[in-house]
Image 1 (cartoon, one colour):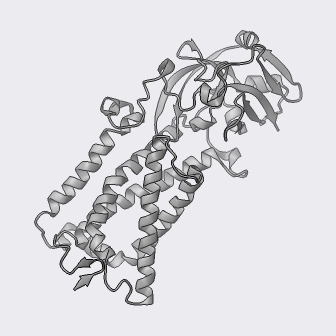
Image 2: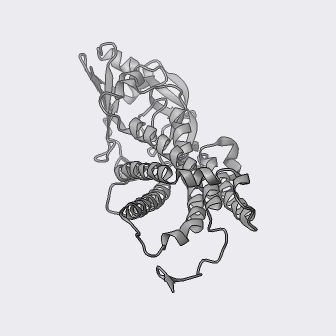
Image 3: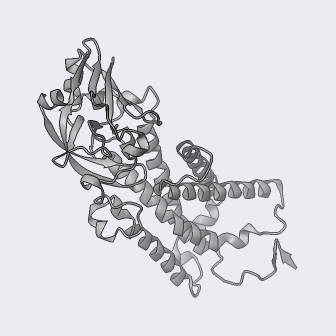
Length: 371
């Protein structure tokens, strides 16, 4: 007798049962829903639709740092939980016959889609934290739509299995099985360990335990990590006659020396990147709003910022009015008391509150008033 590709009785552990599945599944489901909601925030902050852009908040200043940190923490925690859940249910994946009715076939098809979407989502997300993209498709768009597919599949699965979940939600409703407590403790211990040794790239008080995270936010030039270097962007050599051009009703240009003569401000803001790491620094420079007012910008104007880099998806950055007007938004010339290095955006870069790191444009060449 065979059960799918396995002989009858191949699955001998008594822990392949509903209570174990439910106990792990509720934590996995919570992690996946957290990832979906925070990932949606990240996507909308990076690439908002036109109707939403004017309403994105510049406060709290650490908003993106928190939501994207939770996104990556939740995604990494979901990996051992997904492994434990698959171990508990895999005998059901090989039921024989594979479909007993049309409804049963649709249910199994939904499970196949859910499992495939979740595994691909976690796999691509993990490699994104390493900035490694060994696939031909665009990561961000694919990750976004996989998130919808996985979340939709999860909600359908929860609806189909609701009676079974309810019957096994509480410990007292399930029979006592030897080994269940040890298995669940091992799964949750593995999840806790993964979280503790990676969350320090976002959570400052866990930084000493940051052993397996791809980044240490306190290591790098001028005390900050660098995602995209000047060499990668082709901006190692800044033109000798570099000037900042500000276009508006009264366009003008300023040399680096002339920028240094304008009123200077210092702000403390984080750089928070989509890969999950973040670090706070002290930035010094000129308020973006002052530059726009000098160009004759009407009240409530947005800005368009163009980098010296020749190509790249964020070479041109749109800054909605609420960010451009914010007194914390700077055209930064210094970081932590030092002139910017080439890798951190010399001669000038943008820093603004509650924005993804990819929108903190480096090597700024032009700022344009957008009414």
